Image (cartoon, rainbow, N blue to C red; front, side):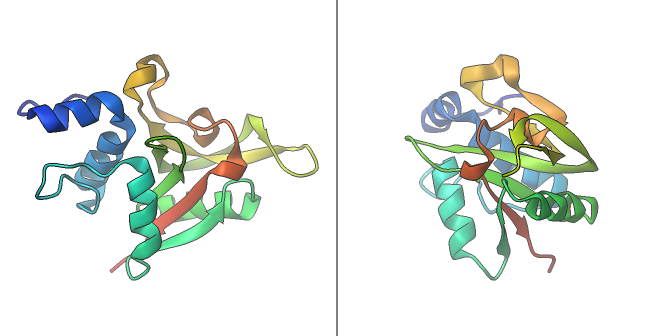
Length: 161
């Protein structure tokens, strides 16, 4: 959870505005050797909205598990992370959206996410960062800490090659 030492003005500006994208891009690179969302030849990091577009378009390497309001999707996300797959949660919207990494670990009951019957959803562990809310950055908390509404969150995993 540190900033790059050799940031150019464009990269630094993008990180300052939407740090979640840089955090996920660098996290996937460090944890899994995946460089899908890194800085392109124009010096541009994909925003969360662009990450969502990328994984939807690259079905040869990424697959949608579904929307986070579905308990089966959350269970599959946790199982994929436990199996060593890269798993991300993305909410599109606004100028940039939001993205987080799903981590391995036991599902935990959410205090904020509920199923259709009003029962707490059991959610996977995750890591999230947003420079605009640095006090809420974390590694190893419930996925529901990163997003307020599970119906707005789509979960993807990277297919093992």
